[in-house]
Image 1 (cartoon, rainbow, N blue to C red):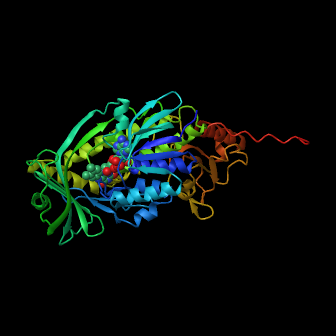
Image 2 (image 1 turned 60 degrees about the vertical axis):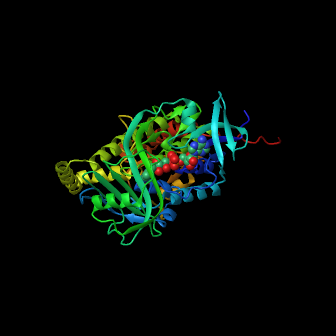
Image 3 (image 1 turned 120 degrees about the horizontal axis):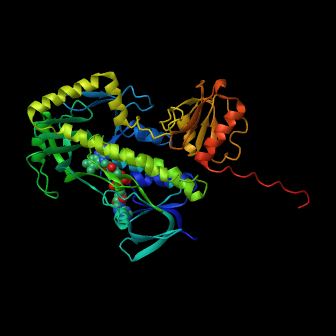
Length: 501
Ligand SMILES: Cc1cc2nc3c(=O)[nH]c(=O)nc-3n(C[C@H](O)[C@H](O)[C@H](O)COP(=O)(O)OP(=O)(O)OC[C@H]3O[C@@H](n4cnc5c(N)ncnc54)[C@H](O)[C@@H]3O)c2cc1C
C-alpha cells in the first residue's frame, strides 16, 4: 500500500520530537505536523530528571542539554526538608533546571539531523483509519486541507489532543487545582536556592531561574481563585510570594503572565489499532514533582523502537502492545503521586502544616525512605513487569555499565539497537541472523551475568553466566530464545551464489 510516510506524528513538543528522532534513527520515514507557526519560546517545564537525562545520553544529546541548565543535587521540598539526589546511581545525580524550550531545541536539532520532516504551521484536523493505512487530514498555514497517508499515526499533540478526540477516546479525571498564577519576572536579590518552593497556610510559591536573569514564578492563593483568563497582576504575585516564602526578592518587570488550572486525567488505553497516544495527549496531572515532560519523553523512548520494529516488519507478535502494558501503569502512578504531593504541599490549616513539615523532614532523613523518594522523583526507580520466574534484572533499568575498550553502555545504545552484554561468555554464534538489530559487548569488569538490553535501556532478559547455569549450548539456546522473544525472527543468510549463474 502506498504511503507518504511510515509514521505521521501530531505535535512537535518534547514527546513528538524525541519519537521522531528515534524513528528516523531506525530508518523509518516520518513527518511531524505542528500547528504552531514556529518553535515556541515559551516554557512550561523546568525540571529534567535523571532518568530523562539518561535517555538523552543514550541519544548523544544529554551533555548539550546539561550545558544549558543548572544542576540541583539537593531539592527543597516543604518546610525546609530537602531531598538529596547526589547519591543516585547515575551519571546525572541531580535535577537539571533548564527551560522546556532548550529541551525542545536539542531534540528538534537531533531530529532534523536524522532527516525528520518537521512541518510548522500544519495542524492535523482529523484522520480516517483503514486496515493498512491512516489517512491524515492536515491544514497547512490555514489553506485547504490536504490528505497524507501514513502507516501509523501518533498523537503527541498535548492535553487538548485532536487525535485523541477524533478517536473518541475518553479522558476521564478531574481538575485538581484552579487559578494557578504564572509570571516571568526579574528579581533584585536572587533567592539563595536555585529552586525555591514553599507553602504556608493558604499560599504556595515556586521560583526557578531561566538562567538569563529572568525567573519563572508559580503562585497560588487558596482564597483568590478567579476564572482562567483573568489577568494576573505583579502585585498579586508579589503578595503570595511574600506570604509563602517570606520575601518577594525585589520582584519587578513581569514580561509574561498567565493563569491556568491543572487537571488529573488519563486515557484508558494508549493504542487503538494504527493510532497511538503519548505524552500529555495520554495523561495530564499536577505540576507537583515536575513529572509531565519527563514522563512524556519516556513514553516516546518506550514507543519509538517498538513502532520502528513494527513498521519495518520484524517486531515479534505483541511487541507494540507492550507500549500500553508498560507505560499506562507508569502514567497512572505519576498521576497518583503528583496528586498526593500536591495535596501535601497545599495542606491548609497551620497545625497540619506543622505535622506535614515534621513528616517531610523525617522522610528525607531516613536513608531507605529518602532513597525511595529520590528514585521515584528522578525516574531511576521505574521498572517494567517481568515474568515471575525471570532473572531479577528483567524489566529493570539498565545501569550505564563501563565496557571493554573504555566505552559506556549508553554510548553503544546511541545506535538504537539491542545490546547483548556478556563477560566474554557469549558463544560465537549467539547472535547469528541478528547482526542488524543487536550489538554484542563485553563489560569492562566481570558481572557474572549475560543480559539483553533493550534500545530504551531496560533489561529485556538476563541469566547468570556462571558454569553452574549450563554450558555453552544451554547458554546459546537461552540467548536465542530471548532474541526471538524480543527481536523477532533472525535474518535468513543470503542464498549462496551457484557457480556459473
Ligand atoms: C505550569 C507548568 C509547569 C510544568 N512544569 C513541569 C516540570 O517542571 N517538569 C515536567 O516534567 N513537566 C512540567 N510540566 C508539564 C510539561 O510541560 C508537559 O508535560 C510537556 O510539555 C508534555 O509534552 P508533549 O510533547 O506531550 O505535549 P506538548 O508540550 O503540549 O506539545 C504538544 C504539541 O502539539 C501541538 N499540537 C496540538 N494540537 C495539534 C494538532 N491538531 N496538529 C498539530 N499539532 C498540534 C501543540 O502546538 C504542541 O506544540 C509543566 C506544565 C505546566 C502547565
